[in-house]
Image (cartoon, rainbow, N blue to C red):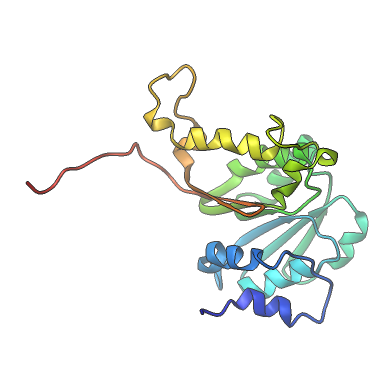
Length: 218
């Protein structure tokens, strides 16, 4: 089995506390490995004890710029070289717009914040357009879409999972025969793939042209 350097960093961690579901590490490495040792700009929502920000800095390398967002002002104490913490509420669209104006275009966004439906949806709608072509948006702990105390519930129309199912339609909008109900959108033109895992959704960005078909052979 191929080694996972991110998992190794987690398992050897003696610094600030990191709390992650263990199956996430293969997902992270699968989608983030190509950014290592490059001047990548990463934003993680949800700082907690600051351990994951330090882990990302080590994983991506010295050229990486790591931004953390949290509502708790104490998290400012976790800033260090290459790591900046910005205090604000991820549900607040005004804050999110100021945030993107401050940090600029991003290569990777990781939403590990408060996990309520409004937080996840508002953050996605404001931040996803600011992810660069070739970049990645990862939303995790999506099991809260099934928990009523977070605004979720099975088939709850306002849950992030149900919201994301509509994005699957947009991904395939090139093939719609009813343009009034489903037409090609900016999401269609800038999203190359969506990957669902247990409690995680990964979206990969890129410039997408209308699909074509070819026939070869006899």
